[in-house]
Image 1: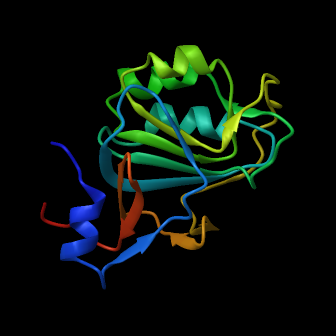
Image 2: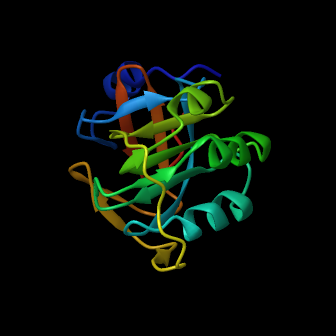
Length: 160
């Protein structure tokens, strides 16, 4: 199903939060939506990988990496896990690497940009918590809708 965030904004202006438009789209899927699962990390992607391997298919993993420019939180291998497991997409408040591989992956990936350095592997961070970035609040279980025009979040699934 194709998502049109502009149409959602027209129909549900009081039910949506609009994410700051500073994110870039990677991955083949440019339009996706689903319930939110969350992870908060800093320069460490162990919990990102674990979430990609365990959250339900159809969910969108939202990662708050504190917009750190120190390293990438996802690369081609993790994007492939998301695609193989049928996740709707991944939104990262941080950076990715292996961008050409990520762009060929059958999933949606949104991030701030690219950096070639890999992350630490310490397993530090938090899962399934409320996040604050992009000028909105991201609650586990809320719904996120993404297309070429932007990212919007609602506390419930919206009829499209």
